[in-house]
Length: 408
Picture 1 (cartoon, rainbow, N blue to C red):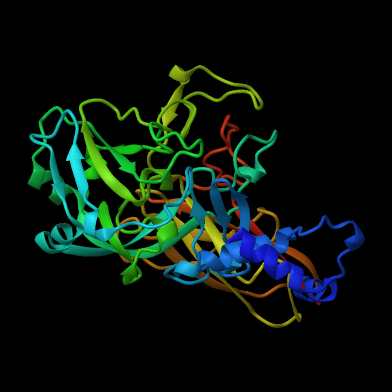
Picture 2 (cartoon, helix red, strand yellow):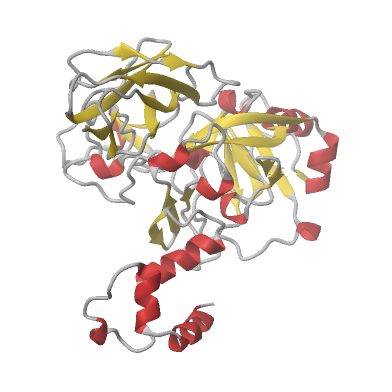
């Protein structure tokens, strides 16, 4: 593919490159021979993944792509606006004719494999709208900075997933009473190329695996799952960090211990049990595995930086979610948190789906304003107004979302 792009670059002029970029290429005379500007590399990548051109490529080894918040306005996240988070290489292709899913592990009665056709036709199909959020969403706001992709707040989605309940498959294969965890195994290759290493092999407790909404999905938004999102089969465990929802599944292990696969070890997807000083590390025994994600909300309309005339009413809308809990209220502030007003809040369409909020705001005078939004879950937990406790991997930032508006 890169060879083809280089051939293409040779045929176009600096003027046409500048036109594509929408700006002059400063220091163009210093461009190395056959060099492909990053802009074009990213556009090619986004197009290849079927993504909106406004999405942001954070990393290409492995591929990690973020969605600008204002593009998350849809109630059901479309494929072209869904973030991408990977730990290994996306498979080039998968041969469905030879593909199977194997159930194995210490706590299965007997190892058993299923074809995709058997999974689709032997078991009842279910469709749920499920929120998936990267555990590191918002990592870029932690200080001092932590390692990892510096996500803004766009590593979240809520698509419609269709598949079979994992619990139905576990009941079919038969699991022992000592089962405490399941771990997934995908065909995504480790970045080192070592076939003996797994890029990621995380899992969920049996209690989560047995929930009605925990799916082995083969469709997203009514179509085959795009390759970048786990074709032909993926685990979808809404409300947990998205890393628990393994892609490109080839096997599931039923364990009599907490699964010990790749990225289950500390500090991966773990946070300190007790607060620690920013910039420091802590012992593995002081870390807990992230399970249900914290309460959070985003303003998806208008885009931050909006300008409008005094006297007009501004509609704001967005989504709120709270891991495995339901959001009970969403409030907004235009005076930097001094006072808060309630928003209209919809009920979730099903458990683990995000909820939509909306309200109309009138501003008292011309000037610069910030709109802050705060969600509260059914247990009374509210978003903090500042970035919460620092942790070594920059997980679980659920601080209030803010947008800027100018009234003239």
